[in-house]
Length: 267
Length: 341
Image (tube, rainbow over all chains, first blue to last red; front, side):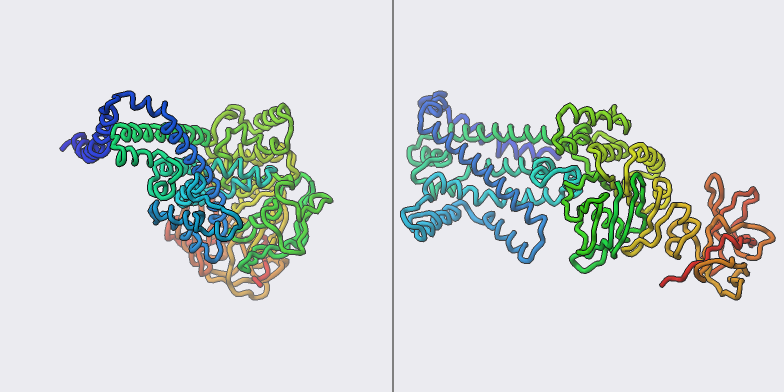
């Protein structure tokens, strides 16, 4: 066997995988979206009809808010956990990463227990405070399962930061705030972008949490589900899936190109 | 600027005494080296001066007449060159050098002018726009130095500035660094474990061991008049002649040598260049190793004392391996030092 045929043989599993699990289903999905009564106009409907476009915008906004909040919370917590060794640190860390083990439905349930009509917040506060079924509840649920993903990535990167860089900045007159802006954040940037991308993509496609919480509001995965199961509008469900995929992909592409420039600036 | 440390000590959280109470004075424009083996407390001392470590209560650090003991590092106005250089990878060479000036909130034009001046001084003009990763080790070292010096610090601190370089480059850059430091005309302290580096760069060397400064003086003083067996063996690697002292004679395994009348103790030390191979010598031994070093040979000899000793030989008739030879040790070259406490 020559070297060339050997390499080609090694590529066969990848080829089969790409065709079977990516190319064929996506192609079928795309065809399904334009095979409906309206044909290509199904994509115009998404832009024209407020129900679809508003849901799409809301989904993107909630996902973006989740991503940035998760980045902010996890970066500060992660830096603290890396820099400080204390009793119970490992237990705290395992609690923080616990949501990784929960399916979305359980997380939605947790949010209902916290902010539902029978929830903790409603019981201990005077007046009627129910947020579980609002955008806020959805945001908190998404944030809850995004934090561990971002936290673990940020901690791995924070451990590799050279403490001498921070010391160098301080000897040059940088106050602690400048050290964060000029040294720590640029050092963490590649991992912030990578984990932020994961958090964003997960939030865009999250279904279980949305299914439990989104009774009054709609997010795209919910709309796809209702179009498909209730209205049997397969073309619209397929078109929305395609649009959800493309929007997520474009935003991730932008994030990746940003990370490219920071890496280039960082050498 | 004059630096003055009084009874400055450092005990770490786990009870390790990294630095015993230390006094150190560095005069304006003086370049002092802290020399010692790893773990002797030299880096801790440097970090205390920089403000990166807090000394134990009781210690005081003075920059001229200012007590800076409680001043945080960013307000001490010290320039520091780190062992790893710690250059900001997300900034160009120019931005790295200008960082300290930017923190001082100087006008842009002033920053540009000063950065250009420092680039010129450190011969980095051609690399100003480069990314840090596109620089060689020697260039990085110069950028680190330029960055430390640009904001005109009161004191320059260097932590093993040459140890990250390979051996050949280290020697060239050692001389370059010595010239640059004199050109800056700044009070500087630099930490090293390499006696050649300390001697080449510093006006004064403070030798440290086990958390304290054991002797401080010019390189010549340390070499010629070490005050302890540690300094003698660490600076210029003097060898211990272990034997029996009988009046003014020292009886060794391979013969007798006369001891000098003056000395601060009764442990005899000698350096390799003072052991001569000489057929009329009073000592005898066997040639173990012969290493050609270009300008001279280094000859390892056994049988003179229980340990092997080294002699420097620069004649033509090279001793052969295993050959029995005779040696002389000049009485005046023997150092008599107090035994270890």
